[in-house]
Length: 299
Image (cartoon, rainbow, N blue to C red; front, side, top):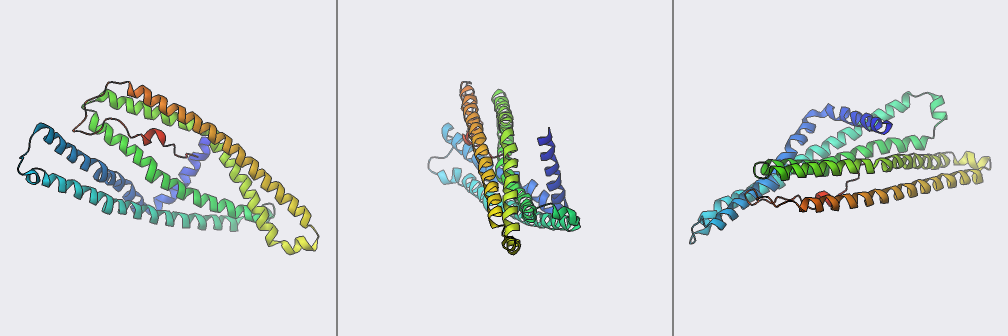
């Protein structure tokens, strides 16, 4: 529960900064599904309609361009608008929002540190505080990029696939949703230890960075008191702690990947045993293989 509370607190912190720039935030949120719809699904539906007409012989043999030229141009135009125009709007909103939020995070952290007492700074590594500030801002960028370009893409793919197929293959749509839910639940459970160890690794890296920064900053005092060997031993210990934390994270990550690698093929084998439903206007009725093979880093 403490892990979930920490994630919720960080999410509220990031969202609070995002809400200061509502135009860019909601511009990105609203144009994202439109970009996916225009680039991937509407052109595919048009091409599926063309193939359906070809299979039924509903065209003029001597005038193929007259029969299919218009729909083909519309499909190309829709995909071009989605890929060139709307996706550029999504990227522009995301990048400008990231720049503004990261700037505000650094400013807020700096102001917070300046307001802390001298006793606080005397009992904390300055380099560790700098490292934590950089990790807080960098995590926002990685989180938003993963959400916008991976998680939301998979989410809208599920939504559009369900809308297209629910009328013709409702049980198949239900199966896709159930399998996706089970896979995500398994991923969250499997990454719980990885998230905890990743946090521990970040703490040891902050300590190592703080040790190095403070030693370099106070190098003259260290040399004056002939404490070079003591500081060297302390830094060696901090680097060893980082190595051990990284090894623990590696082992937990390998176990997580093994669990997900087993659960994904098992779900797809069970799904493949279902009777194949009728396609919707020629659209494929099975999810892309990347849904099962992709395991986004959720920690």
